[in-house]
Length: 345
Image (cartoon, rainbow, N blue to C red; front, side):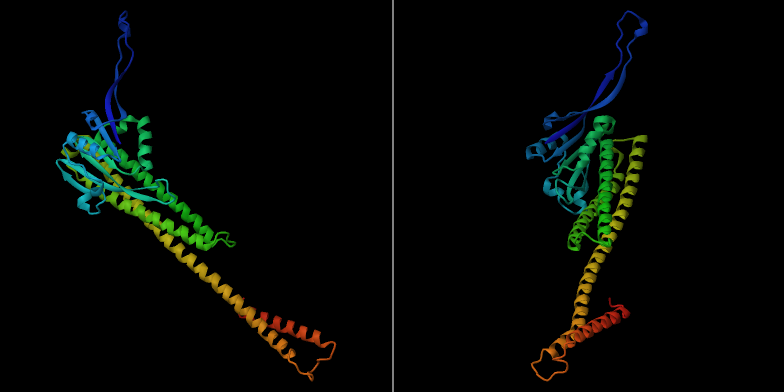
C-alpha cells in the first residue's frame, strides 16, 4: 500500500463585499498536509512523504521510475551489514533501522524500516506496522506542520520512534519491578517456575530493544553527517536539523544506558529466582532429613518391642505402654531442642 502525504497552500480569511473599503479581503496562507492512498503516478512535486507499507513489486518499480533512484527490496532491508543499511546512491540517502513493536503478540518483535531522503522528500519502506506510525499520523491530524518537508518529517517521525522505544523500556521495567516483588514476597503466590518464564520473556524483549537502539544510534549519527544538498536544507533550517539529531543521539545513548540497567536487573532477578528455588529445595530436603532423624530412635524402640520373645522386660506390665510413649516423647523433644540449638530448624 502506498500512502502519499501532499503539502498544499490553504487560504483563509474574510472576502469583502466590494461596497466598503474597510471590508478589504484578509488572506492568511498556511501549508496543510493531505494524505491519500494512491499509485506511484500520483506522486508530484507537492509530495512530502511517501509511505510504502507492504508494497507490491509494481509499486516499487513505479516509484523507482518516478524518483529516479533504486529502492531496496525486503531482502536488502534484512541485511545486517552497516554498509547495506546506511549508504548513498544516486544522490539519495538510504537509512535502515530496526524498530521494536508488539504486532499483536505478547512479546516484542523487531523489523527493519528504511528511510530515504531524496529530492527534499521522505520515502519510508516497511513491512511492519508499528504503533509509532499510527501515533505520528494522529499528530499530523492536529499539527500538519510536522510534515512540512521531507527532512522535517524524517526528524519528527524519528522523534516519535525514539519516544515509543522509551515507552517500551518503561513498560518492560515496570514488569520487572512486579516480578521482583513476586520473588521476594514472604508469602509467595506465584510459582517461581512461572516467574522464570516471565523473566526469560522480559530478557528477550529488552534484547530486541537494545538491538533497535543500536541501529537508531547508527542511523542518527549517519543522518547528522549528510551533506546539505542531500537534505535540501540551508541556513537556520540546516543548523536546526543537525541540532535535533545531536539531541536525538544523546537520547538514544541515555536509553541504551537505561536498557543496560534493566538487563542487569533481569540478570540479578534470574539469579535470585534460581537461588530461591534452590533454597526451597534445600528446606524440603532438610525437613525430610530432620523428620527421618527424629523417627529413627522411635523406630528402634518399636522394633525392639516388636520382637517375638516371651521373656522381655515390662512385656506384661500394664504401665509399660505408657512408659514407652513418654520415653518416645522425651526423645522427640530432646532432638527438637538440639536441632534448635544448632539452628538447623
